[in-house]
Every structure is written in C-alpha cells, then in structure tokens.
Length: 135
Image 1 (cartoon, rainbow, N blue to C red):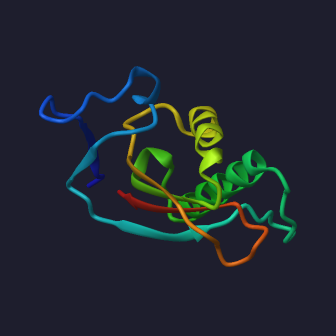
Image 2 (cartoon, rainbow, N blue to C red):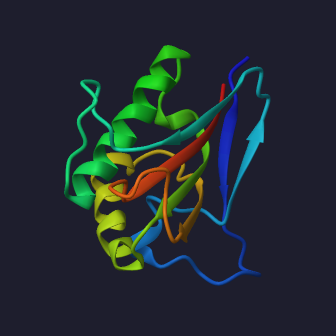
C-alpha cells in the first residue's frame, strides 16, 4: 500500500500566499504509509566531492542528492512529506524559493521549515536540507 499525502492549509491559519502554494503547506497529512525514509541533512556536495561556490548551485545539488536517495529507496519527491532547510545567510531565503519552484514545484507541497543558522559543518557550506518521505 502506498502512502497518500494531502496538503493541509485550513482557513483558521494565515493564508499561504499564491506564490508559495506549489512549494509549501502548513502541514502534510499522511495516510497508509508502509515505508518511511528519513534523509540526513544533505549539502551541495557533488558526487565527485566538489562544492559549487554559489548558493543556488549548492541548493540545487543538495536537492539532487536528496532525489538520488529517494530513488535508491524507490521513491520520488512526490513521497516527501517534510523538508527542513538550514541556511547560513538569511538573504538567501528569496533565492531558495526560486530554486524550490524550479526543482520541486508540482504535486502535494510538503510541510517546510526554513531556519537561518550561524554555521554548518564546514564554513563553505551555505545550505543543508533534510527530508522525510513516506510510501
């Protein structure tokens, strides 16, 4: 049995702006999950070990890394119920939305948390992304 995901954006909460509705839900309801995948924080490190300098490139690579882990478990981003983003610069939040729209829009938008932190595991890491997926 495959999991069913449903976006929850009740009228009792603030209305999600139109520009974010494809990439954000206040909550994601999961029914009938038979498999859960908890993905450790992924950085923008390429398979060859290199790291792009630009924030957008690091974010895109981190998303690609999550996609590879999902595929290894027989899942796609359609199975993702929760994403956590950790940024070292709050000014990158606007660009993160653009990357998310380009890479992740479509399907049921997951529940999302974006946090600015003082540092990640290495000083040249600009973003870390965690995911929880269900099937």
